[in-house]
Image (tube, one colour):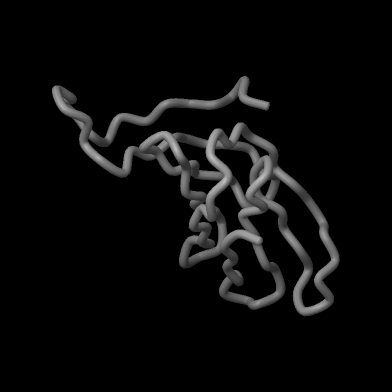
Length: 101
């Protein structure tokens, strides 16, 4: 399995599923309530964490970016750079994944 995180209310658990994205479960019942799929090129554990307020999920990536996922509808909001690539003037530019499946 991948990495997991509980939200602040401790009633939702998000898991990086190592295959195609993140799964959200009701906790402690562990009933899967939703899944957000996106491409994973390397099958290695990716970190995942609910934001402090629980509105967002930050999921590690294997391309130098972390994905910012809306916790309520699992839409992907942005790609967050985790490292400043050589020659990049602004390491905090966001790339939208609106058409990402």
